[in-house]
View 1 (spheres, rainbow, N blue to C red):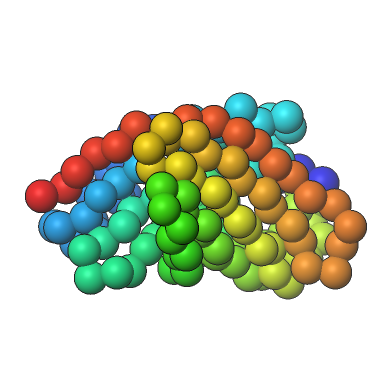
View 2: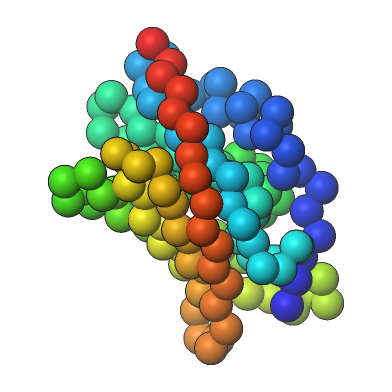
Length: 138
């Protein structure tokens, strides 16, 4: 199951993330994906706002949510566990996927990241690993 995404470039992520709150930290991540047009984008951005809110933006959220996804973050030392969902997605064949659940683990010290995407009620899963650059927006 793959999907065509026309918007995954770093410039699009940064332009979209620029609309977030002024006091925020943005992690711009490059991921090594096994499937070129799979459900994990090769470019992803995590935005952590000073008020505690977090958002994720990538090719999937741009295609199906027209922007970012709200995320839940759990911190344990330098490790951030980031969860978000994308609802009402369709694959290239037109199959409807009611909910995709995403989980990312980001180490803020090493800036290493891993992401897993799993469609609800399906056995498949997609994953990728990579690294992030930090960009403070202050």
